[in-house]
Image 1: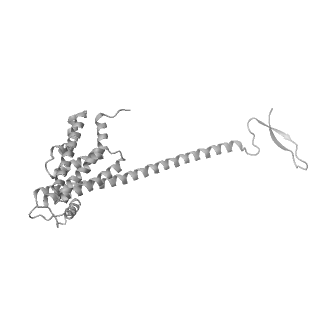
Image 2 (image 1 turned 30 degrees about the vertical axis):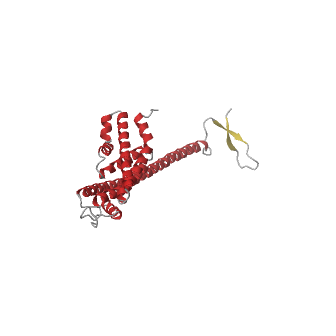
Image 3 (image 1 turned 120 degrees about the vertical axis):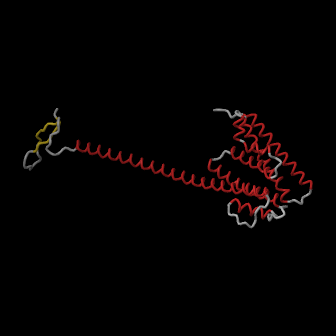
Length: 275
């Protein structure tokens, strides 16, 4: 059995710590936005936590890059992780760290494909709704003409944007807020397509499984019919050989006279084997 590579071992060991760091980052990111009037010490602590998480993400990326067998291929296939490391100062893009962690945990999870996909989609929906709301609130709250002033408005806007309903009662007015809106709409359409495809794949797999069961049953029935036909032919052949007609001589058997019982009208011949 092939031993796992050092990169795979590192990813397995770092999965749980990265998930805990993602939760810590989520809290540190949300507290200053939900509670802007909190003490300065709380804001500084949240900032420190964010930088610690960023440093952990950077270390994790560098370690995996060093351990990768093909580093160029690693950079091409882990571009989101790289973006989460090199873009730490742009406020909305800091969420890429959390998105990268969720993708990383999803890739390393050991579940059935459909369960893994369903869990990943559900987590992505919740994460996008939550952090999309926080991001748009952070950039729209102080906008002069903005109408997203509290967390409730931001969550409602995220729901209507992700589902592409767009009631228009709340909408971003800043350029960065509109960029977030475009990203949220595209993400909602993509997730809806993934959910639809997953449901269709589930139905198709069920139909294929039922078809295979029906084909196996039909094959078994045909095999049983063939066996019944063979048995009938064998029975007919054996019956025709064993039951000879009266008065018909069977090869190898001679006819000998046998005394009739008393009061018999005539003598009858019976067959007996020749010596």
